[in-house]
Image (cartoon, rainbow, N blue to C red):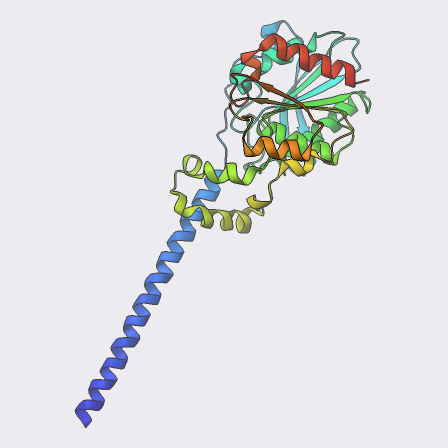
Length: 314
């Protein structure tokens, strides 16, 4: 009887040890899983920062000023170039996308477009900026346009301080810069005309598809990264739907540009855009990939965008 009792006690003890071992193993797995998720979220929040400016406006024989502009988010300062146009009362804020700076966007042709817009028609003052965590701007994290909208709004504030009046300020953004301009325009009526090139529509599926390439971690860790991004940085990627902000911009003039390769006729993104903005001023450029419309059709692009701003800014 005593042997049976000792055996039973030993079995219970062994059982408890096995449970503890299983629970301990599960705890370690969860810790590792969420630690990798936190690492991946951190990588996703920190874009490639290129400080290699291929040229300056002087290469186009233009006068310009290096400027530092306070974002509307305290503590973040945005770098840029102010390219004035004598006699012009109109200004365009140009905003590059994720991983790019004011010269590398549009496959190294962003400054080329700025120079041509500066002299288009009666001319435009141009402010080219780098978003936070890009180029020579402050900040460490890229926030899907939610925080970056404050950089665009700060740029608009700065332009107004130069004597450019409300009604005379437009914005042109590419990729993340386009999405940032969408969020800024939905919030700030001082942006009177907007051109977006490759703006996000419903960003969560795009982020999910690009997770592995962007973070270097298997797709298995995406749920952990999603949670850790929300906990550590305060951004819920599931809520990123620029198309909802787009609906708040009209009746202000709004030109959306996409390459056909990124917005095919039968794509879900195209369907969402058509549904949300059935009367959108939409230009889809055949043969062009993401932000590739200008390099595909430079003269048509300049004519369309230049005329858009000339006709819609006072």
